[in-house]
Each structure stands twice: as structure tokens, then as C-alpha cells.
Length: 337
Image 1 (tube, rainbow, N blue to C red):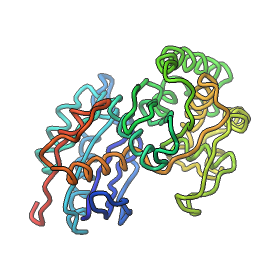
Image 2 (cartoon, rainbow, N blue to C red):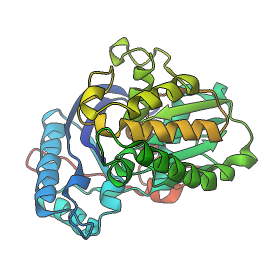
Image 3 (cartoon, rainbow, N blue to C red):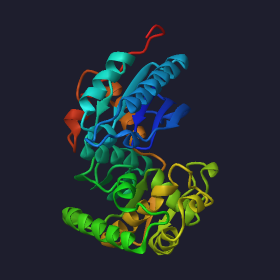
């Protein structure tokens, strides 16, 4: 079957269509995406402006038509921190539903962490044993760890690369003082989060998901995306520390000349590097693997699992964010929608 999953993130809106069957590996068929930084449309009250809503509604409609035109049989749509934290998030979701017929599901931070972890577990398999996964988004930073299909601990903290750049790094390049103050803030925040994983011991594998981690790995010498998803990519703390200092001295324009850094993400790659560096230091790990699967793939896998057992019944077992995730609604697709 062909299934579509629409991801409304902090930096981009992305529709991914995959072909698969229950129990089978999802194979990408097509994608449709565009840059859309919803946080750039926030007013002084933290609400998404009418213009931002218009942009969102327009793309959701495009995505629905794209999925229908490519014979998608099933369609999931979800949003994360960009709408979750907006002052008028519920009103925006209602408008999208009314004008497009698409029911955007709102994921909490710990649910993001849990579903992303599930995708990572499927990618590496049971042989990876205990996994710690880190995911840097635009608005939040997710951490999850465990030995099972779903993590034992899943957390979300407000350390997204876009958020930190807006709140702390106004200069271009930023001042040494602002970088130092941001380092302190990141460390203080993670010092409260990291001890919650201590009882799980040392992970056998540390993985990183998200575009930010992929960009950082590419900057430090990992293979380009053109090499394919099965090439191992690693991000080493030693290299990251060196490049964090370099990024701090570069303007956003200069960063776009680096491999793996787009114009959209150039302003916030420094903040992402600071978060990644601090996390690796506090978890006391020298390197991490970059996993090609993340939140979108996790949601797809859960949908296929549900269809394998019974689409109307909850999945067996338990885990972080389980009950709410199993009740996620899909949007019926039809040519006349």
C-alpha cells in the first residue's frame, strides 16, 4: 500500500509518500516539501498570524492533493512544537481541518521522542541493545533511551536550534559573550535532564536523528546524502568541538558554503552544534551514529503495525506515549476532497 505522512515542523513542512506492507520495509516513493518557519509568523502574543496560517493551509491543501494524485491509500498528518506552543494552536488546527479536510494531530514532546526512538530501534535492530537517541528540532530537543521497542525514558526540553538562535544569538556572527551565555543555559538545562537516564546505565549505541545532526556530521566529514542511507555516518565529539568554535566565528552567509548546510539552516546550525556538544559531554560519549530514520518513519511504522494487527485495536505492549499515539487519526483521501 502507499501511505503518506505529513510533518509540520518548525523549519519545513514535508509530505513523504512510501510504499510498504505490514511487516515490510517502507520504501520512499515521493516527497513534497517547502521551507516554512511558522515561528517567523508569531506575533507579540505568541500567536501564528493570519499570513502564517494562510501559508500553512495552502501547503496542507497542496500536500493532500499531491498524496491523492499519487494514489496514496492512507494519510497521516501531525504537528510538533511550532503549533503546539503557539498561543492560538488549537484555532490554527481547527482552521486547517475546516478548510482542507486534513486532521492535523498534535504530538507532545515525549511522544516525539518515543516515536523517533522506535524508528531508530527498527533501523539498528535488537543487536544494538541499549540505545540512546538524541534529536534536535527547531523548537525542542528530544532525548530517549531504552532496550525495548519503545524507550524507558523519553524527554523533551526547550533546546531547539531555531528557538535558541532567536532567543540568544542575535548577532551575525554572534558575540563571544552571547555564545558563552548560551552555553551556560544549555548546560544548566541538560544538567536537569541527563540524570534522569542514569539508572539505565551506559548505552551500547548513541544515535542522532534530525537534519541538524546530519548537517553537523557532514560538516565534520561524513559522507554526503548522495551516498545513500546505508553508509555509516558518525559525529565525533572531538571534531564537533573544533567546528563549534569555527561556526561561532562565521556569519550565516559564510556557513552556507559548508557542505551540508542550507541557507535556511545556516543561521541556526551553531545553536544546534552547541546543544549536540553539551549533550555528548554530559552523557560522556565520544561519538554518535547518524540514523537516517526519525519521526516520520516512526509514525509510518506504527501505522503499518496497527494495520498488521487490527487498525481498530491498540497495539500490544506498553511504552512511552503509547495510548495517545495508537489513537492518532488518519485523514481519508478521495479525488473529490
